[in-house]
Length: 254
View 1 (tube, rainbow, N blue to C red):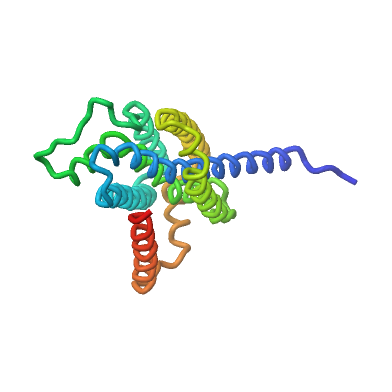
View 2: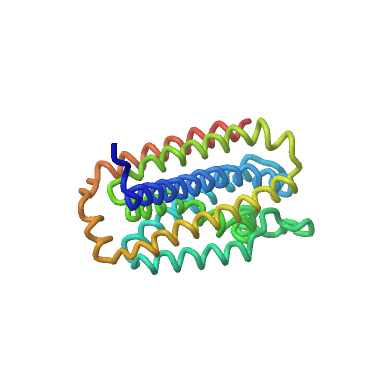
C-alpha cells in the first residue's frame, strides 16, 4: 500500500493546528467573558450598598458592551480589509493589556452627590470595559476568520465551544472560584487568562494574515449566504430579551 504524500500530510497537520488554535481561543474568551461579570460585580457591590439596582446596572453595562462587541465584529469583517482587520484588532488588544485593571483601587469610593448608576458605568468602563468588549467580539469575529482560513470547514463547531466555555464559567464561579479564592487571587488569575487570550487571538490573526486572502475573496464568500429577513431579526431579538429578563429577575433575588 502506498503512503500518503508528504505535502498532503503536512497540509492536514497545518489545518488541524489552525482549527485547534481557533477552538482554544474561542473557548478561553467565552470562559473569561462569563467569569468577569460575577467577579467584578462582587467587588463593587459593597461599595454601593449591595442593592439589586447595583447588580442590574452591572448587567446592563455588560449587555451593552456585549452588543457593542458583536456590532464591532460585524462592521470590521464587512467594511475593513483582511489585513486591516488583523492590524486593528491586535492594536486594541495591546491597548487593553496596557490598561488592564480588573479591580478598582482600594482608595476609590463612590461620590454621594452623583448618580450611582453613572458611577458604576464609569467604574466598569475604566476597569474591564475594553477587555470585556474585546472578549465579546471573539465569537463572531473568529468564526468569520476561521471560515476564511479553513475554507470549506463549518465555523459552527466554534459556537459549540463558546457555549461550553460560557457554561463552565457560570457553573464554576459560585461552586469553585468564589468559595476557594479571594477576590485578589481571582483578579490575578483572570488577568493571566486574558494574557493567554491575547496571545491566542494574535495567533489566529497571524494565520489569517499569512493566508494571503484578498478583500475581493472575502466579499465573494460573504455573498454566498442569503441575508436574514426581518422576521428572523425580530425573533432573535425577542429570544435574547427573554433570556436576559429571566436572568435578571432570578439573580436579583438570589
